[in-house]
Length: 156
Image 1: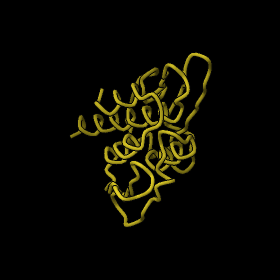
Image 2: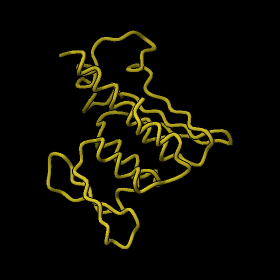
Image 3: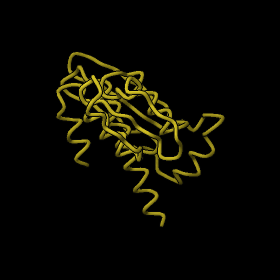
Image 4: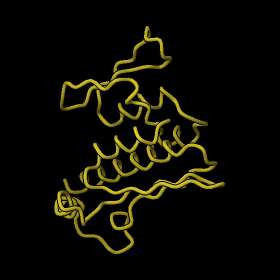
């Protein structure tokens, strides 16, 4: 488990600093704006392009829409489910092998696996106490990215 996942799990709520750390972990070029009127504001430049994300688009620990938008851009072809109850917030990310655009690529990238493997069932995060659904989504995203990286490392 990474320090970032541990920080996310222990976060009591949204954090601009954690938002920035998530983008840094994902390879974005992050520029913190100390003179900006929003405390902790930053810009994030995608690794492969010059586009600039506005600070409002980067609230991935506070806004479910921003969190899911980041998942969609980082994990094309992956499905998701989220839920919340009195005990926990839940986020599930899973490869959608039925996706007409990405299914074949996902099968090739993930390789052969047994039923019940994480590549079959996805990554399911149960974050307690509730009230942090966007953070649960980000934990699932980081976990998937780590596992994908380990698959790539094992293939080399």
